[in-house]
Image (spheres, rainbow, N blue to C red):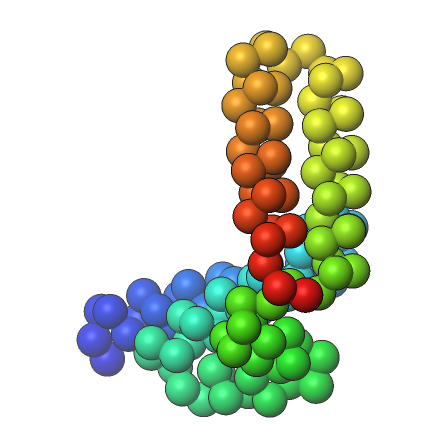
Amino acid sequence: MRVSTLLWRLLAILSVLLGVIGVIVPGLPTVPFMILAAWAASKGWPELERWLVNHKRYGPHISRWRERGAIPRRAKVYATAMMLLSVSILILSDMPTWGVLVITTVMGLTLVWMWRRPD
């Protein structure tokens, strides 16, 4: 097996594992990790890609992303709420002001990008 194939497979496995953890841990997204896993698998593990794309729960999300770059409105609302909660916690923490500003700016830019994606 080539090194590049091994690296793609490792990324796919890591992404699937993070997605599975996201099922259990509130606030950790599952679908983006499954989308990443399908993409990585397409580079070196076609069987895993096929399984993910045909998965009953995650397959439709992967297909919508591949076809239109779509993010469901419900996911956008949930992500927005989690980011607002995170910023609130950051503001109440003893993190330096510059850190809060950097993280808040990154989250804000992410929200703008996300809400501009089709539903």
